[in-house]
Length: 145
Image 1 (cartoon, rainbow, N blue to C red):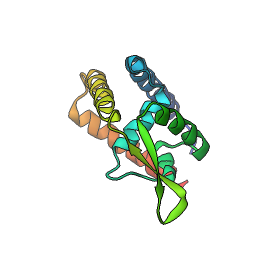
Image 2 (image 1 turned 30 degrees about the vertical axis):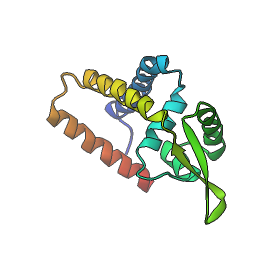
Image 3 (image 1 turned 120 degrees about the vertical axis):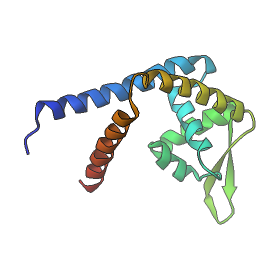
């Protein structure tokens, strides 16, 4: 099936929205002295019920192991995370949040939630649900390709 103009524009718009959303959030979080990559790691880490392994965290964030290792080095130096040995596998490390990370994550969430409220202003619930169905179908097609 040939690509039509709307499909092309949709893809471009989606990429532009994703970049713009993240850039605006990064701008608003600049005062916390965290790079986009580091605050993203903290947010993903906070969503785990128990400390994930470094590999699990890398998969969640969508980065390669060596990239995550460098990010964790800097977060560890800031006292925000710590690596813990896994008893069953000496090569594996679990990543745990340190107490100073909790209020920082709450600040990140507060700022991110305020941005979401602004960005979804004027968007009806039915429009959002339709958009989510379209995105889910595209994601499903991606997984099958």
